[in-house]
Image (cartoon, rainbow, N blue to C red; front, side, top):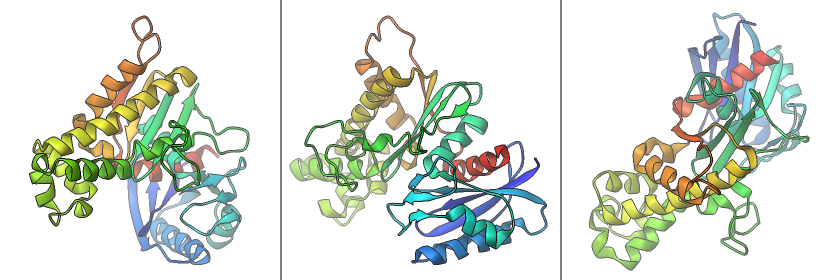
Length: 313
Protein backbone atom coordinates (compact mmCIF):
# COMPACT_ATOMS: atom_id res chain seq x y z
CA UNK A 1 0.00 0.00 0.00
CA UNK A 2 1.24 3.47 -0.87
CA UNK A 3 0.20 6.78 0.66
CA UNK A 4 -2.15 6.99 3.61
CA UNK A 5 -3.50 9.84 5.71
CA UNK A 6 -3.16 10.12 9.47
CA UNK A 7 -5.53 12.29 11.50
CA UNK A 8 -4.71 13.75 14.91
CA UNK A 9 -7.69 15.15 16.85
CA UNK A 10 -6.43 17.86 19.18
CA UNK A 11 -8.20 20.13 21.60
CA UNK A 12 -7.93 23.18 19.34
CA UNK A 13 -7.19 21.76 15.89
CA UNK A 14 -7.60 18.63 13.80
CA UNK A 15 -4.55 17.84 11.67
CA UNK A 16 -4.50 15.48 8.70
CA UNK A 17 -1.27 14.49 6.98
CA UNK A 18 -0.29 12.44 3.95
CA UNK A 19 2.34 9.92 5.05
CA UNK A 20 4.50 7.67 2.90
CA UNK A 21 5.86 4.19 3.67
CA UNK A 22 8.98 5.65 5.30
CA UNK A 23 6.98 7.75 7.76
CA UNK A 24 7.61 11.05 5.97
CA UNK A 25 4.78 13.60 5.99
CA UNK A 26 4.25 14.90 2.47
CA UNK A 27 1.36 17.29 3.03
CA UNK A 28 -0.76 18.52 5.91
CA UNK A 29 -4.06 20.28 6.36
CA UNK A 30 -5.56 21.56 9.60
CA UNK A 31 -8.99 22.76 10.66
CA UNK A 32 -10.23 24.13 14.00
CA UNK A 33 -11.70 21.56 16.38
CA UNK A 34 -15.47 22.23 16.60
CA UNK A 35 -17.43 22.21 19.83
CA UNK A 36 -19.91 19.43 19.02
CA UNK A 37 -19.31 15.73 18.43
CA UNK A 38 -21.12 15.61 15.10
CA UNK A 39 -19.30 18.68 13.82
CA UNK A 40 -16.00 17.00 14.65
CA UNK A 41 -16.83 14.21 12.21
CA UNK A 42 -17.43 16.81 9.49
CA UNK A 43 -14.18 18.55 10.42
CA UNK A 44 -12.22 15.28 10.17
CA UNK A 45 -13.63 14.78 6.67
CA UNK A 46 -12.70 18.35 5.70
CA UNK A 47 -9.14 17.89 6.95
CA UNK A 48 -8.78 14.62 5.04
CA UNK A 49 -10.09 16.19 1.85
CA UNK A 50 -7.71 19.12 2.22
CA UNK A 51 -4.68 16.92 2.82
CA UNK A 52 -5.38 14.43 0.03
CA UNK A 53 -5.54 17.04 -2.74
CA UNK A 54 -3.04 16.04 -5.41
CA UNK A 55 -2.27 12.66 -3.83
CA UNK A 56 -3.55 9.15 -4.46
CA UNK A 57 -4.61 7.96 -0.99
CA UNK A 58 -5.26 4.33 -0.02
CA UNK A 59 -6.67 4.61 3.52
CA UNK A 60 -7.12 6.89 6.54
CA UNK A 61 -6.05 6.34 10.16
CA UNK A 62 -7.58 8.38 12.97
CA UNK A 63 -6.04 8.81 16.42
CA UNK A 64 -8.79 9.47 18.95
CA UNK A 65 -8.45 10.09 22.68
CA UNK A 66 -10.60 7.49 24.39
CA UNK A 67 -11.50 3.83 24.37
CA UNK A 68 -11.64 2.34 20.87
CA UNK A 69 -13.25 -1.07 20.36
CA UNK A 70 -11.42 -4.20 19.25
CA UNK A 71 -12.55 -3.72 15.64
CA UNK A 72 -10.89 -0.29 15.55
CA UNK A 73 -14.18 1.19 14.40
CA UNK A 74 -16.15 2.57 17.34
CA UNK A 75 -15.11 5.04 20.03
CA UNK A 76 -16.67 3.48 23.11
CA UNK A 77 -15.93 6.47 25.33
CA UNK A 78 -14.06 9.74 24.87
CA UNK A 79 -13.25 11.88 27.91
CA UNK A 80 -13.18 15.24 26.13
CA UNK A 81 -15.72 14.70 23.34
CA UNK A 82 -19.31 13.60 23.79
CA UNK A 83 -18.72 10.27 22.04
CA UNK A 84 -20.37 7.22 23.56
CA UNK A 85 -20.29 4.17 21.25
CA UNK A 86 -19.61 6.53 18.36
CA UNK A 87 -19.35 4.65 15.00
CA UNK A 88 -16.53 6.93 13.85
CA UNK A 89 -15.12 4.58 11.21
CA UNK A 90 -18.45 4.26 9.37
CA UNK A 91 -19.26 7.96 9.56
CA UNK A 92 -15.90 9.11 8.20
CA UNK A 93 -15.82 6.40 5.52
CA UNK A 94 -19.20 7.62 4.25
CA UNK A 95 -17.83 11.15 3.94
CA UNK A 96 -14.40 10.50 2.39
CA UNK A 97 -14.95 7.28 0.43
CA UNK A 98 -11.79 5.61 1.77
CA UNK A 99 -11.14 2.74 4.21
CA UNK A 100 -10.77 4.11 7.75
CA UNK A 101 -9.03 2.68 10.82
CA UNK A 102 -9.68 4.27 14.24
CA UNK A 103 -7.09 3.89 16.99
CA UNK A 104 -6.51 5.28 20.45
CA UNK A 105 -4.26 8.31 20.08
CA UNK A 106 -1.62 7.08 22.56
CA UNK A 107 -1.49 3.72 20.77
CA UNK A 108 -1.06 5.55 17.46
CA UNK A 109 1.79 7.65 18.87
CA UNK A 110 3.44 4.55 20.32
CA UNK A 111 3.25 2.81 16.97
CA UNK A 112 4.72 5.84 15.21
CA UNK A 113 7.70 5.90 17.59
CA UNK A 114 8.18 2.14 17.28
CA UNK A 115 8.16 2.20 13.48
CA UNK A 116 9.92 5.45 12.68
CA UNK A 117 11.29 6.97 15.88
CA UNK A 118 13.08 5.95 19.05
CA UNK A 119 11.77 2.38 18.90
CA UNK A 120 13.45 1.42 15.62
CA UNK A 121 15.46 -1.75 16.13
CA UNK A 122 13.40 -2.92 19.12
CA UNK A 123 10.85 -5.75 19.06
CA UNK A 124 9.40 -5.10 22.53
CA UNK A 125 8.68 -1.50 23.47
CA UNK A 126 6.50 0.21 26.05
CA UNK A 127 5.65 3.87 25.40
CA UNK A 128 4.35 6.40 27.86
CA UNK A 129 3.27 9.95 27.08
CA UNK A 130 3.71 12.50 29.85
CA UNK A 131 1.35 15.24 28.78
CA UNK A 132 -1.56 16.84 30.57
CA UNK A 133 -2.37 13.26 31.56
CA UNK A 134 -0.47 10.00 31.11
CA UNK A 135 -1.07 7.67 28.18
CA UNK A 136 0.69 4.63 26.82
CA UNK A 137 1.10 1.93 24.25
CA UNK A 138 2.35 -1.66 24.20
CA UNK A 139 4.34 -3.23 21.36
CA UNK A 140 5.41 -6.81 22.11
CA UNK A 141 6.77 -9.13 19.46
CA UNK A 142 6.51 -6.33 16.86
CA UNK A 143 2.76 -6.11 17.35
CA UNK A 144 0.59 -3.43 18.92
CA UNK A 145 -1.14 -5.11 21.85
CA UNK A 146 -4.62 -3.70 22.37
CA UNK A 147 -6.19 -6.35 24.62
CA UNK A 148 -9.32 -8.39 24.03
CA UNK A 149 -11.65 -5.40 24.01
CA UNK A 150 -9.24 -2.87 22.51
CA UNK A 151 -8.66 -0.75 25.59
CA UNK A 152 -5.31 -1.96 26.96
CA UNK A 153 -2.42 0.33 27.99
CA UNK A 154 -4.46 2.88 29.94
CA UNK A 155 -1.43 3.22 32.18
CA UNK A 156 -2.44 6.59 33.54
CA UNK A 157 -5.30 5.00 35.43
CA UNK A 158 -3.33 2.35 37.25
CA UNK A 159 -3.91 3.12 40.92
CA UNK A 160 -0.54 3.74 42.56
CA UNK A 161 -1.77 5.36 45.81
CA UNK A 162 -4.73 3.70 47.59
CA UNK A 163 -7.29 6.39 48.39
CA UNK A 164 -4.96 8.96 46.82
CA UNK A 165 -5.72 12.08 44.81
CA UNK A 166 -9.05 12.19 42.99
CA UNK A 167 -8.62 11.62 39.27
CA UNK A 168 -10.76 12.96 36.45
CA UNK A 169 -11.74 9.36 35.66
CA UNK A 170 -13.55 9.19 39.02
CA UNK A 171 -11.03 6.93 40.73
CA UNK A 172 -8.42 7.88 43.31
CA UNK A 173 -4.65 7.60 43.30
CA UNK A 174 -4.19 7.12 39.54
CA UNK A 175 -0.61 7.24 38.21
CA UNK A 176 -1.30 10.30 36.06
CA UNK A 177 -2.13 12.30 39.18
CA UNK A 178 1.52 11.91 40.18
CA UNK A 179 3.35 11.71 36.83
CA UNK A 180 2.01 14.18 34.26
CA UNK A 181 2.15 17.81 33.26
CA UNK A 182 -0.74 18.55 35.56
CA UNK A 183 1.11 16.92 38.46
CA UNK A 184 4.25 18.94 37.67
CA UNK A 185 2.35 22.21 38.00
CA UNK A 186 0.78 21.06 41.26
CA UNK A 187 4.19 20.17 42.71
CA UNK A 188 5.60 23.54 41.70
CA UNK A 189 2.71 25.51 43.17
CA UNK A 190 2.84 23.60 46.45
CA UNK A 191 6.59 24.03 46.81
CA UNK A 192 6.52 27.69 45.82
CA UNK A 193 3.84 28.34 48.44
CA UNK A 194 5.89 26.55 51.11
CA UNK A 195 9.26 28.15 50.28
CA UNK A 196 8.78 31.23 48.09
CA UNK A 197 12.38 32.26 48.74
CA UNK A 198 13.46 29.22 46.68
CA UNK A 199 11.08 30.04 43.83
CA UNK A 200 11.94 33.65 43.05
CA UNK A 201 12.56 33.02 39.36
CA UNK A 202 9.63 30.65 38.98
CA UNK A 203 7.19 33.12 40.52
CA UNK A 204 8.56 35.99 38.44
CA UNK A 205 7.83 34.13 35.20
CA UNK A 206 4.13 34.07 36.05
CA UNK A 207 2.10 36.78 37.72
CA UNK A 208 3.96 36.58 41.01
CA UNK A 209 1.44 34.23 42.63
CA UNK A 210 1.53 30.47 43.01
CA UNK A 211 -1.79 30.21 41.14
CA UNK A 212 -0.14 31.91 38.16
CA UNK A 213 2.49 29.18 37.73
CA UNK A 214 2.00 27.23 34.49
CA UNK A 215 3.87 24.30 33.00
CA UNK A 216 5.91 26.51 30.66
CA UNK A 217 7.07 28.53 33.66
CA UNK A 218 8.24 25.40 35.49
CA UNK A 219 10.20 24.27 32.45
CA UNK A 220 11.86 27.63 31.86
CA UNK A 221 12.70 28.10 35.53
CA UNK A 222 14.15 24.58 35.80
CA UNK A 223 16.39 25.19 32.80
CA UNK A 224 17.75 28.22 34.64
CA UNK A 225 18.28 26.28 37.87
CA UNK A 226 15.36 27.51 39.98
CA UNK A 227 15.44 25.16 43.02
CA UNK A 228 11.68 24.68 43.31
CA UNK A 229 11.26 24.04 39.59
CA UNK A 230 14.13 21.53 39.51
CA UNK A 231 12.76 19.75 42.59
CA UNK A 232 9.30 19.60 41.01
CA UNK A 233 10.73 17.82 37.97
CA UNK A 234 12.55 15.41 40.25
CA UNK A 235 9.31 14.57 42.06
CA UNK A 236 7.51 13.89 38.79
CA UNK A 237 10.47 11.77 37.65
CA UNK A 238 10.44 9.78 40.88
CA UNK A 239 6.85 8.71 40.25
CA UNK A 240 7.40 8.15 36.53
CA UNK A 241 10.47 5.96 37.04
CA UNK A 242 8.82 3.90 39.77
CA UNK A 243 5.90 3.26 37.43
CA UNK A 244 8.23 2.14 34.65
CA UNK A 245 9.81 -0.32 37.08
CA UNK A 246 6.37 -1.82 37.67
CA UNK A 247 5.72 -2.00 33.93
CA UNK A 248 9.07 -3.78 33.51
CA UNK A 249 7.80 -6.48 35.86
CA UNK A 250 4.71 -6.86 33.68
CA UNK A 251 6.11 -6.64 30.14
CA UNK A 252 9.94 -6.92 30.31
CA UNK A 253 10.54 -4.69 27.25
CA UNK A 254 13.93 -3.86 25.81
CA UNK A 255 13.06 -0.16 25.81
CA UNK A 256 10.73 2.39 27.32
CA UNK A 257 10.02 5.42 25.16
CA UNK A 258 8.99 8.57 27.01
CA UNK A 259 7.05 11.13 24.98
CA UNK A 260 4.57 13.90 25.58
CA UNK A 261 5.11 17.56 26.34
CA UNK A 262 6.97 16.95 29.61
CA UNK A 263 9.59 14.86 27.79
CA UNK A 264 10.48 17.87 25.63
CA UNK A 265 12.73 18.94 28.50
CA UNK A 266 15.11 16.11 27.59
CA UNK A 267 17.68 15.04 30.17
CA UNK A 268 16.25 17.45 32.73
CA UNK A 269 13.47 14.90 33.23
CA UNK A 270 14.86 11.74 31.58
CA UNK A 271 17.97 11.43 33.73
CA UNK A 272 16.02 11.43 37.03
CA UNK A 273 13.43 9.07 35.51
CA UNK A 274 16.23 6.61 34.71
CA UNK A 275 17.61 6.91 38.23
CA UNK A 276 14.18 6.28 39.76
CA UNK A 277 13.61 3.35 37.39
CA UNK A 278 16.86 1.72 38.50
CA UNK A 279 16.06 2.44 42.15
CA UNK A 280 12.69 0.67 42.05
CA UNK A 281 13.38 -2.13 39.54
CA UNK A 282 12.93 -5.43 41.37
CA UNK A 283 16.12 -7.50 41.13
CA UNK A 284 17.77 -4.61 39.36
CA UNK A 285 21.26 -5.58 40.49
CA UNK A 286 21.02 -8.96 38.75
CA UNK A 287 18.82 -8.45 35.69
CA UNK A 288 19.20 -6.60 32.37
CA UNK A 289 17.80 -3.07 32.35
CA UNK A 290 15.53 -1.75 29.64
CA UNK A 291 16.67 1.46 28.00
CA UNK A 292 14.70 4.61 28.82
CA UNK A 293 14.66 6.67 25.63
CA UNK A 294 13.31 10.06 24.62
CA UNK A 295 10.63 10.03 21.94
CA UNK A 296 11.90 11.37 18.60
CA UNK A 297 8.81 12.29 16.60
CA UNK A 298 7.33 14.84 18.98
CA UNK A 299 3.82 15.98 18.12
CA UNK A 300 3.93 14.14 14.78
CA UNK A 301 4.00 10.67 16.34
CA UNK A 302 0.24 10.19 16.55
CA UNK A 303 -0.44 11.34 13.01
CA UNK A 304 2.38 9.24 11.52
CA UNK A 305 1.41 6.21 13.62
CA UNK A 306 -2.26 6.43 12.70
CA UNK A 307 -1.36 6.64 9.00
CA UNK A 308 0.89 3.60 9.23
CA UNK A 309 -1.73 1.58 11.11
CA UNK A 310 -4.18 2.37 8.32
CA UNK A 311 -1.57 1.06 5.87
CA UNK A 312 -1.32 -2.16 7.87
CA UNK A 313 -5.10 -2.57 7.54
